[in-house]
Image (tube, rainbow, N blue to C red):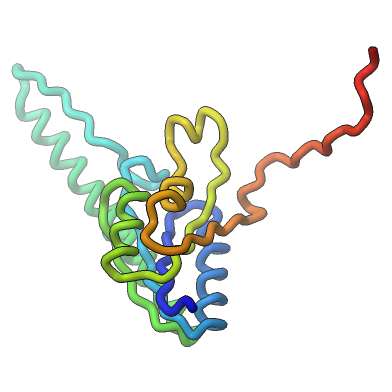
Length: 176
């Protein structure tokens, strides 16, 4: 059965549901958790990608902008690490052996790499519910993980993710 569960966490609204499900599952299976957070320039809280002007006339402006960006990134990184520690403490307080790690990179690839090196029996990942162009341009971490993971994957869906109610399908025939 599952003894080592990797839990991919981000700062989306679904994170609480994913963490709660992971803790509940780990308790019922007497499994340990590995909480993983991937720092990404595309996270809502992230300082984004660095903007460099490369103006040869004023090179000092580039270095000031870069230093400012680095400070903002370090603040973001430390804040995320503090949250990760809190989440691990939450699981530990409920009697679940918990480790955590944080790194930067492509979330899907990092999750799969950590799952292989830890080694996880199961990956629990949330689903943001991206569809259409949003999924095309931003990608789907859960989709990537499902297709590249070295172990089983459980995708946790949450009612928090549903932003619009689905319209019931009509069974009536269209008028001729």
